[in-house]
Length: 307
Ligand code: PGA
Image (tube, rainbow, N blue to C red):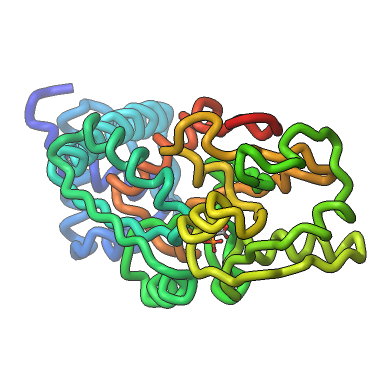
């Protein structure tokens, strides 16, 4: 091929080969038909062989034309790949990542975000921690890139990926008489004063479902609006409760007893969620891939026993 074959000619040729029509190629490239015909004539001359044959309204590629079509497809694929990798590197160097997490996810979300930010120090990260109602409103408005939730919302069309186990375990003060017992029946647990999370809490819903399935009513003594308040009440001897094992992340081993209760832990998951149909940014996609890639190493032990 002589040197004066131009990139534009190859682009036009690729479109004709793909669409099987001069007219459609000229429409796709916003060119007039005479321009397209002229450029194909020049391309054929510079190659030194006919590339396209026209029979009536139909066009066919000659064997040389078919070969050139294959070569141009490969050239464009390589170029696309190059352009994408440049965009990706730039995005990961200076992009933004905004996350929103439901309160209980605050026990692990900052750590994950911190690890990711160390890998990509140029990225501007933000994390808002709030209640379920506000997370759902933000998903509906598509305000943030990704959301951490304990269950995929049913009210909104989303893509939800499980990223980590979320075992709900029964907690008591370390000197509680049940701390030494094994395989404690749910009926026995129901006799203890129970400390319950507020209405709307995913943890609470999961616990209520588990007891309702067995037809057992809990003996709720206090309703408290946060995991930390529940933990304080447990240590104060006000009762027992069940919380995500992640809530113990910053506690000393042995500070709480994880009771060995039948039908516990309740095995739930944490989900990374984004609105269906949303195209994730390069950074958000990289963060999601990072979360999915490290899943195996982040799950807390789902078993019972001392934390
Ligand atoms: P929550 O946690 O109990 O704070 O709502 C989220 C969930 O587990 O669904």
